[in-house]
Image (cartoon, rainbow, N blue to C red; front, side, top):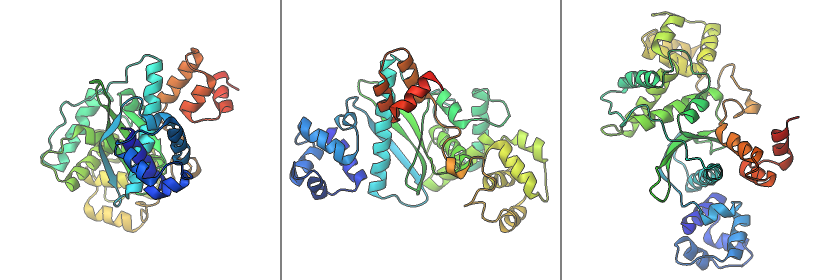
Length: 357
């Protein structure tokens, strides 16, 4: 596994085998690095330290002390991702999971079990069947009909590990499983692009939740994506609630009304318009007119964002990992330095977080 970690980190950094050998100052040859990556040789401690510094990854990541790997990494992107981009994302997730599992082990906590609301994943005969699935999930989780105030908090509470990270621009989000050794259960992880608006991140989280609940059997990739999008709209904007707020049928809507409603459900303006069309509240021509007039450009630029563009990722952010780190620090189980290392934060900032202003 060390070999795979070195290879991923090298690709993330954009080095060829020879380029990495040069960056290491001739400490090892390109041929030796190739053997490390194929697990034909094991690097010495000195070489590992040098690799860690050059590739800007932690030693614990390279050494794979917890024997974990990512499985079923399913990128859903605007365009094809490069090998370097995939390696960058996978390395980021692995490093984060290493730290997450480390603090859970220190606190003697078993990783939160995924509280799947539907078992096994359901087969859909049509995209529109995702509506009933979304309602069933809401019922099983006892969410009622009101808008969900915090999607990230909800998924963390149900046992999903959520990471909001700066990803390549073409990657909006993905879901994967973290495979652990010793027969331990796989951990589901959802990763969302920090660069996206809060409205888009919430939809992506609901979309990725759908991929954990919908069986891909009998669905091609395009249909599976449409079903996940349909689920996301139905989950965040329950039909009964929307009809109560908007009416059962509308011939036209105004800009201010739509902006207020999209803020109520905390979704993108374009997603709300599509939801109205899916529910039959507006027809195709009304939707087309909206996108040609007052909603022109809404697919690329969000009107009246919930989150300031300079503060992306600060609202509805994952909190559980940070809470566990401060818990261990307060109980004296880890040092201030170790907490800063786990959180990737300056020591003075961590100290302020412990003691307050």
